[in-house]
Amino acid sequence: MYASNKKYIIFGAGFYGQRALEQYGPENVDFFIDNDSKKIGTFCNGKEIITAERAAELYKGGDYQIIIASLYAESMAAQLDELGVSEYVFYISPVHGMYETDELIVNPYEQNKEAETEQEWSDSKKMEYSRAEVFKAVERLHDKQTLFNHIEVETINRCNGACSFCPVNRNADPRVKAVMSDELFRSIVDQLKELQYSGRFTTFSNNEPLLDDRIVEFNKYAREQLPKARIHMYTNGTLFTLDKFKELIGYLDELIIDNYNQELKLIKPCVEIKEYIEAHPELELNKKVTIVLRKPQEILTSRGGDAPNRSELREYPDDRCLLPYKQMIVRPTGQVSLCCNDALGKWTLGDLTKESIEDVWYGTKFTKVREALYQGRGFCGNCKYCDTFSMG
Image (cartoon, rainbow, N blue to C red; front, top):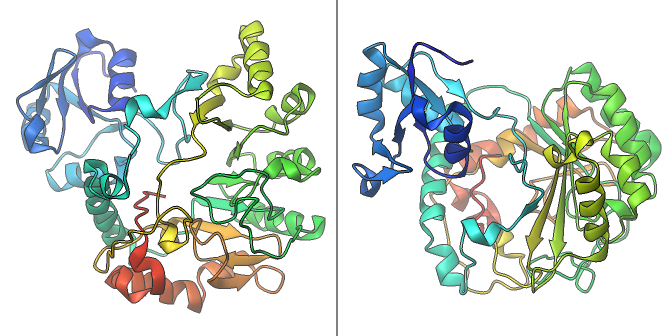
């Protein structure tokens, strides 16, 4: 909602803040808000960066509207609430896209420098900030009985990639092969329909979804039954033909193709998809397709100690985790894993071949995990080694 008689203050000076500045118009924005004390008093695109406290004072004067433009929107909203700011606008929905951009090709290393060592990864400023935001978000959600807003339904537990950071890459996968039955998939979707589910839904988890020949059919069924859900998919794209891409894309709200190449060159399927999208601007597929340039050999999260290329594990015993409050991960067998980082399925919190989605989500095992992680990762097994601090 645009308030034509007011100026704007944008909370968040990063990627989404810059997009909000462009959308609302630099002439209509006076300030950015940032919680980094080192940035206060500096300028970003000609706009002064101020504290949330000062922004609240300006808001109370009646001349400003605050726009929250960040993946940490929920935390920022809580901060504004505490400061007496009763009205604000979310630039992106809390159930947002994975890549909120119209750019077809994204190079993530331009925004965030690749970590050259494990220590550099662990000491990053982003990690420090994320830890604090996750801790506060868990505090807000702990006593609420809310349904997850993200569900991953893994229909086949295999991947054809050889990424060094993945515990289930094709050279190291210890899992017994499993393929989800049609009946189980439809049961899961039908239950979500009964729940009027409106969060994220994907037929992907720790796998390559295009290895399942039914993947188009499954997403078609999910789209028909879950009109309010945001349906997305991650894939490495290697198995895409242009025909399969065109068949699948109509059922998705967002498609992320992780183009794995150490030199960041486009693989052949991505070249074909890029050329098709650029040749048909009237379809506006750049608004739902993002090709992400990724390196298969890089340092990422430890995944609770399971990442093959991580050996220098730090402990985070007092940190909390938001994932068991926000996501459900379903394996092809119907077993529900602890989280997306539990790629090997070491923790099973329920079985959808025997229990309903609600019974699992509100059941004893999930409840105990949430209680443990509310106290700290040190109370939940190898979670103390996990350096994933996601807002879900």
